[in-house]
Length: 291
Image 1 (cartoon, helix red, strand yellow):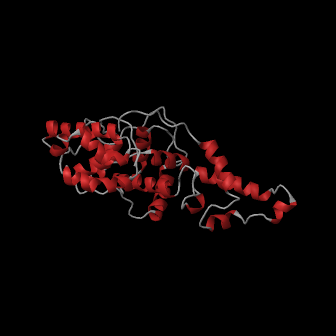
Image 2 (tube, rainbow, N blue to C red; image 1 turned 60 degrees about the vertical axis):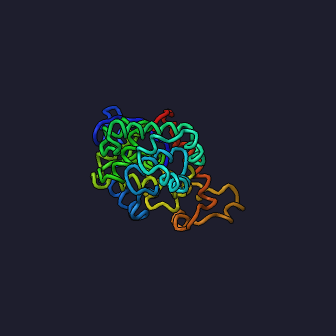
Image 3 (cartoon, helix red, strand yellow; image 1 turned 90 degrees about the vertical axis):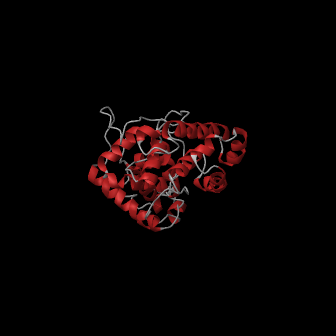
């Protein structure tokens, strides 16, 4: 998982902005696309290991600019030493820095963890709050982190938006914004609340496994419904129809259907992907200090 931006403390999903451009996909098309992705990534769920809200909150803070695998390597010993917010609030900063160093940005994360734990102890009697309003008052916690904890640990509908969700949803065309809160609002407006968590987890897994910065489009279940994928396939088809020389014609790649059926990226489709990635790349949202 990745760093989120500090967002609104409003309960539930934020409202769509009137100034935001509309996604290219209709609500019905979005639900159809997500249904296909649900099938491609069945039972998608956070890959962070946790047993209670406190552990998930700590793990999510640690996951900033790190990997879930790395966090899962660190947390067993961490939770054995700091089993609750009270013990974490009393942690020695220098010792804690050493214990989480391998997750990266350990100094800032140490401040966030201890600050979060102190706020939980002082303001919530040592119990992690189960509301958006309460969670976003904690040090290092924004809407993304709050939605992760609410949906996975409390069973409260929530749709966390990280960089994978931003990239995948915009490429497909089911959202049209580079702002996490606006993307959350657009997705929540068309997906039923009981599928908000699944939508987020599925898009995250798709972004990690398939729709990477350099995507594996032939492996994607929705490539023919995706704005980015359609452009890619059209570009690759044109290139296949116009070989540059007789020699190139002799080595011409199979049709798009054949390429799509293959397991990996083939030479004829690589230039099209590079070109499409360059044309559709959007500027990253401004970096902010809190999750």
